[in-house]
Image (cartoon, rainbow, N blue to C red):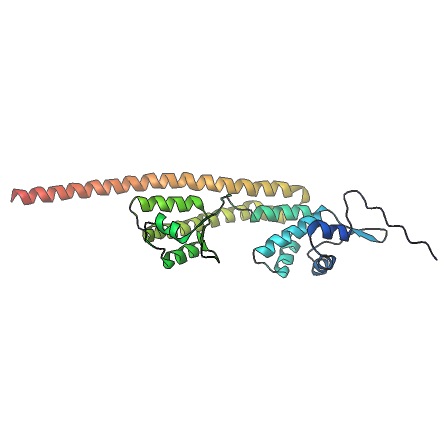
Length: 263
């Protein structure tokens, strides 16, 4: 009987496909299927055994995240194939792109609670539908309502307390959403044209990936500051103009009343 071949020693920081399966909670079969589809780079081969690294773990986790957001495996493969550089850099940059702009923990309300906040006896389904179209509310399977931005929800509730109707509040939210979409598009185009395209034309040097990722993070923060600063200027000017019109109209009304009394 021939001696059984010795199991190869696992290189430091590497793992076999079985260890990768246990680490990620995937089956060996699904890991191999991911490799066949081009979602995972091939393992490093030592002797006759393939070994995997943290980059493979990150790729699997990113694939799961993208799947959870509705992307199919072919779309995910195209995203990963379109990037150059190490898998770790691709994963880090993809996560940075997809990261929430600002971390707000959604709040969940019973329909009655939300109706009370909105100053109504019961919740109007049309208002919820409008909120869902604006991306600020979501009706859950159990009938509860999720407010995706508590800050925006609290602002809306405060306006209702001041006497503004829920419909008028959502009208303002609709206008803000359209203006915000335009502002976001402007900053994304700025990043693509001024930072990503020069990096892409240079062949996406691997050593520049961290700089591009940092530029993306800083652009997001600067966009928030710039929009807030511009809004404050615009709000001041709009309030001033409205105040002038109100005073002029009040003055005209006073003159008309004085003329009527004089007659």
